[in-house]
Length: 75
Image (cartoon, rainbow, N blue to C red; front, side, top):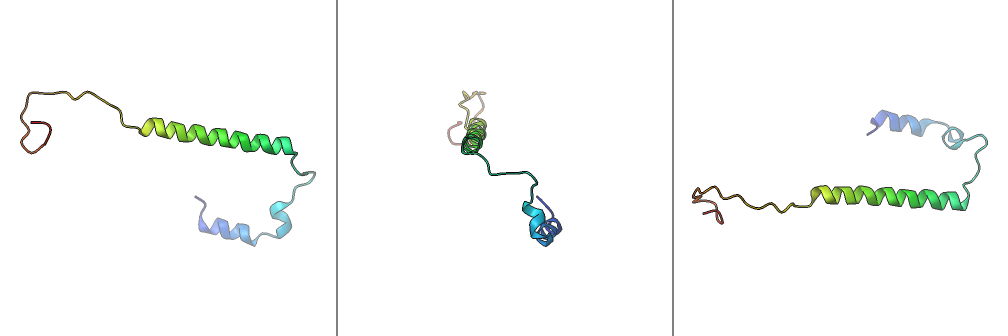
């Protein structure tokens, strides 16, 4: 996260310095569509990775033979 002073500094810059680009033109439609599609694919991969890592794993319970009085289901 940027420090608050850095954001304030960006707001104080002159208007032409923020969006100026020498020789830059508008993006072509196929390039823009490709960038949007690539962003969507990367976002889906991140979501799927988080989903796979966070889902509960079914592990067989190991009974150790002890009697647990205050734990329902274990004794």
